[in-house]
Image (spheres, rainbow, N blue to C red):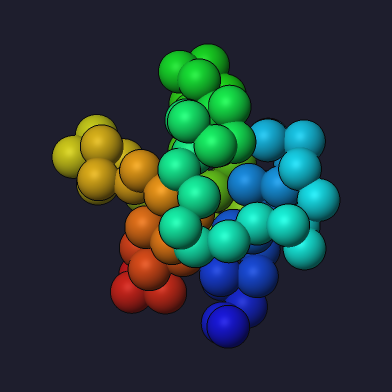
Length: 76
């Protein structure tokens, strides 16, 4: 796991109020972790801030699972 992916997991854990150790790549952000629209926006803003990157609306729309987020940040 890259340092960026490590930070992304920290952010997902914080926003979802889930223990980081319980997060898996297959978990859906909305259905499994309860990340609704306001929390989704908060997740994107924190990822952008902590990882110093920009996430377009199109990129954000493709992030449905924890694994999607991890793959996105690994490739940025």
